Image (cartoon, rainbow, N blue to C red; front, side):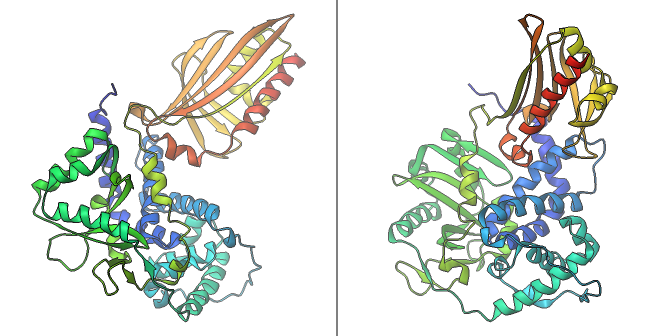
Length: 474
């Protein structure tokens, strides 16, 4: 049986969401335009929040959250865009020193639809959104994106011109909602609007997964309680339709309101609901969502005007599905690990002395700049790796068995995320020892956080070789 999530963790999470709450709508506007999708943009926001939550938990005081959130979200969005948009691999153009650019916000950027931004190369897209939509200064854009101010100016000039050219392009052909998809949505909406909660529970697959975005995740029998919350609220109304070209339900609150307040995405398996993604607690996505209701002209089957990008499958169409598959409420979590080992002709005392001499690491270990602190049982140590210059990684020595085994541990409290590095010395005979080093990353947030961890395998192999060279030299 899985253990309940500790109350302390839930409190810490709520406090963190309160801290970042004022920044989230603005952050979503940026990410939605980078990805060309309100749903994809919110996925990037969720990933950024998870990374920043982890980073803040390691700090003694709360850093300036707005620049940190934008920088982390920018990097996450750019990484994702580059994986899915091969056509946007950009050369770095030469930039004239005397380049002139207006520092006033360009109204074309504010008016442009989300799909228009996707047509721009990434650097131009980012610069135009931050400047013309969100009002960043040139210096703030440079800090967020890692570009120089001069490169930001060049990206703005070219990006603004690209948006103007895109405005002249005709709209794409209409997209269609398949009759069977429409029938499923209408059945779900009819039961919901009739407040037939038992009928909705009967539609759920046995292992149905629920995600209340930014609020909670449930699976199996736990999902049935989801409808109880709606039963306690004043009636809202569901309307089937297309959200950015995908089947969706718009939630109108109050029921007679004209504009949707938030959206629900459903996944189906054998005519039963397999996944529910409810954006009630991320309702800011509704402000700019491209939703066309199923009662629009052209029904049945539905056909309605959409942006030009809908002429082909949207490159981020599968982003939300990636997140729907990752939740795990059964007490297990995804693990990522790196490991290395080598044979060393040396005594275990020699190797142990090298591994536990913090001040001596830079003299032989080519993977670290320095190690601060005392490597001893229960002590806390800061490791500065060459792979991430200037950044300290705090660890605690949790296992210390002289000449045999040592474990360094770090991460977030209550099992949210944990990294554990184990050093092991094993006698092989004939004066040889086997040195092995392994690091594992586990925890509820591991699938998200490990995406930002670079490939450590070359550094692990280099660590082992450096130790071998130093120990065998005597």
